[in-house]
Amino acid sequence: MQSVLVIGAGKFGYHLAKNLCDMGNDVMLVDENERKIEEYSSEVTSCEIGDYTVKANLKALGVDDYDYVFVCIGDFQDSVVITSYLKELGARYVISKASSLVHEKFLIQNGADKVVYPERDMAYTMAVSYNNTIIHDYFKLSDQTGIYEIEPPYSWIGKSLKKVEVRKAHGVTVIAYKNGDEVKTINSPDYVFKKNEHIIIMGENKNIKKIIR
Image 1 (cartoon, rainbow, N blue to C red):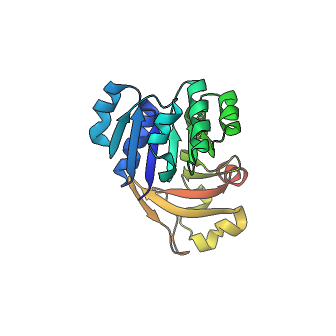
Image 2: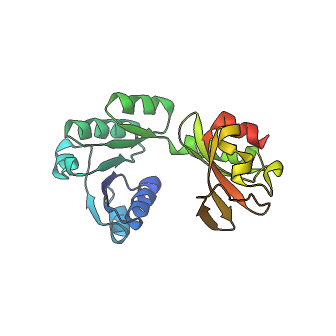
Image 3: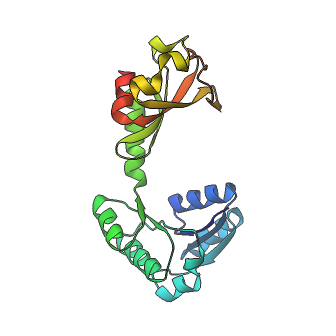
């Protein structure tokens, strides 16, 4: 279980806080909007109302006690100010939400350990998924690598993982298969690729693109 502070109860901040709490983490959600905090108070571990562009209010939260602090503020200046204050107050790991490339740059310059850009990342994920009918889902790991849910190539159907030699021949790793909504890890090289199943593969984008062409 992780201790997490989420600053900002907009759509992104709320869903992030709720999902983290549902996964068993200790989550504090804070925002200056009293109505939102009252509405969401039963869905997270704890809530607080306040203006967290004020350094003293942030300090009162004990930000250095949390494993992660997420800054989910839409306003450019406020999110940069809060990120800067958090690092000054000793926050261990700060993840800040950006709304543009310029915003991302300023957040990094002001101490963010990681910057997330939900709109850009979701747009790219959708572009990858809908660019090719063989790709059914995608998760970006880095600019060069990702995890893909794909239909197995026709030439693999009926053959085992060992016979296809996927890692040796294609430089990717098959980590699971999906049948309907059921996902199971592949632990044996004797797994046989089936037409009605999808596979979950991980590797460099350039290698995976060669497979699905």
